[in-house]
Image 1 (spheres, rainbow, N blue to C red):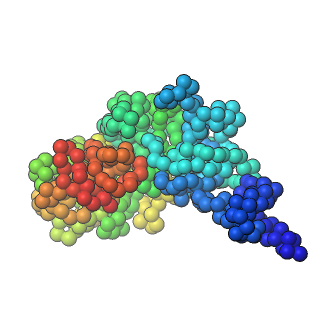
Image 2: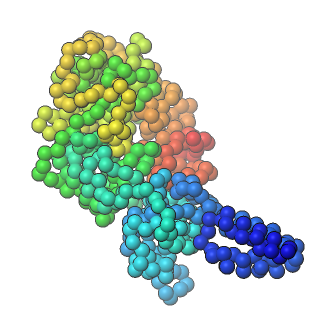
Length: 520
């Protein structure tokens, strides 16, 4: 009777398990566990101990996986399979082998590293679209979070809703896609940035903003592909070939690696931005606006606390609901903008302006495009192509979005003053004195207020010998490297950082390296 009760208890424990271990194997393991404990535990207790061991490390989604976990177990759909690479192992005659597999679920993407015999098996047998039950050890890799796989088996019964087909429009992009082809207009380009990898080699990255009739997306070009950005002209029609979709700061980005390309095409592509109505913007919002330039002040320069020179220029933009002053910071102040031009400003932060009026701050994360009647876009200011994939319903913001922000929609006479008089010039002088900055950071103008552009201070902002630098982690280790879209900064910190994480580091700079007292 006691044995039957024990067998039933083992069966109950096994039924509650989510494991690929067979019931027969589980019962054998229970018997071994009882023997190992020398009679200190009965079969039911041993079964519960084994169940705990089997469930340890189980996570609900890829988004729950974090570097430093001893082992994790999760389900993921195969998005793409790389090629086997060989490498020399220290003290061994036989070369090692590794293949990287990109996988995803509904919450995130992750890179799986398969080694040696597993790598050969993956190339021979694994197919894109398969769902795997993975067990392995997570860590920070160069391309983001990756898992060194200990075990992976197909799970034919599991379903993961990740679209693997290549989207043909910006609106159709979904996280986890690979081999994506998208056509659009180049709205804005950035300069190439370099960084040092942990292995001592130098990496390159550049960005441009792509727009089509459904929205816009930031395109990230890696290494050799980064050189392509210098050949692209804003307003030209291109096709991104064999890109893959990743997420950064809640926005989708389209990445181009060594398997992808950006080709110019002889094709008409429209870009009709959806925008927020100017009279509906509110304090601290990050908005997209478009309209006709009613006035444009001269560029003004100012000294930052760290001794460098900043610059700002104010323009006033009007749509059919109202008008607003827009502060163009840094290189965006060099943009050739004149009264009568039709412009599109994306990812601008609404702040307090001159005489308590609201003002839109266009910093390094913002995009400024002069619209052209022939192509739907024009030469755009250099700097960070802010924002991720946006378009269609995803780009809408309630009733404040303009129904149509096409080229003819900005010339209405209604809503707001058509000229700003001298107040814009006064605003530039006042803002520079009170704490405006590139990217909306008060540090550029010598103040110490909060960050703008939705991201903190761009570049360095010194206050009493202390510098704040906000950027994205492009290399972990000692030191870490942050990239703010315009420059990089080496950061010494004891904090654990992850690739792609956006942080602000505060501390003194010595020999070009920021010794962070605080990281947030």
